[in-house]
Length: 533
Image 1 (cartoon, rainbow, N blue to C red):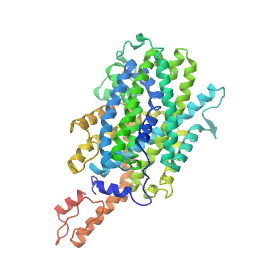
Image 2: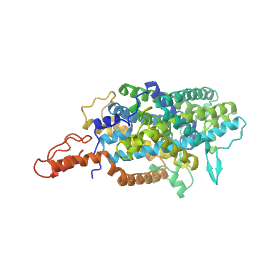
Image 3: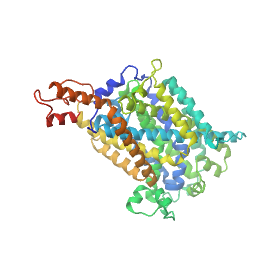
Image 4: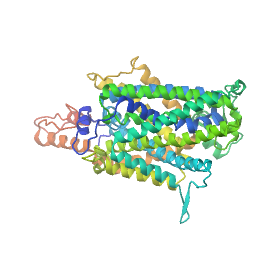
């Protein structure tokens, strides 16, 4: 058993062209930019920004967004280099498989499933709640949930997930066109928020820009579980605000940047990926970062962060209601609904593409990777993913799992950042269209920043994350490791070496991995050579 066997880049490219399992290249630079904006604008602006200002960073939430944006930009540079070198579906999972080995690739793929599945369920549930708020503003009293046999069902989550599952089944390009329309609408709403919000700004609300650190006043289990993992490791008492509050806020608002690793999962469906991917990803990131910083400045300038902290679930609407502009609050409620709509679409697509890549490799059932011969989309898999997200969003309390999205994303970012260094050493012959500048410096800085942001997530998030990893490893050793296509080819190469005494080329095994003595059974050196495949 070799847990760190790697899959060659050539084999990944070949698998992407396998009949009945290939995707259609139809996305342009514009589509990728809109996709990144679609999944980011809404997830961050309409939800976590106000929460981070109220509970962690105060007016310095602007700095939190800047830190998160820089961290994301560094990691996305690494994604862009990988994606132009290996333009296939699967994103960080495929990149890790090519550089660090199968078991680590499984862990990253499993974490990406955690990120995308949890995010899809959380956002779908919020969409249903916002829909009821919009109905209320129209004078209609329609509750967000209905009772079915004593079970609360959030019907809105089922509705929106079902709609976009159908669209994604019909085709990625069609889904992108629908997403473009929704995205342009919500960008207009965000610009409205910025322009109107700045008319209410009072500079005294920015003071103190970095609120002094305050103890939460509790030492019980609940307080310890809610404090940052970094604070727990250093023995600090549970507290909020201050310098650590800025980084805790950055760890929280990082949720607003999850869209850009999702964009990388679409590499196999992009036209001319060597040029399109970097342009689309960085263009979208630049737009989103500017919008986030402007909105956070307007938000914390309109009302004091202490006012936001008084609300149970502070949002942009809270700020406009506080200054008496209820009409703007209505527009924001509509914008929130539209904003969350496209987030769900991109997350559902990203989830299915990660599972598709893992099932192609046999780590999950191969039947999941089949695509439609007519539309070149993974119909069966998309329906399964949509149904699973809808059930969890509609029937369970997913609110507690919000930070799980961030820890899954950040763990993938760490591996991709380090993986670039491995890829350059293993395959110096590769000439990707985009290359992270300054040699090894930026990938290392990216990995360190991502790891540090991970430690600023809550202790309970790390506990849930550990449980998720244990479940994932159990599945890998019970199923994935034995059914891995690379394992089968490794075994075939080994049998060929031991049986015939001659080197036979076997697809998927690294060149030179299956060299053996022509006389005797495989020696220790032969075994080592096989193990490196």
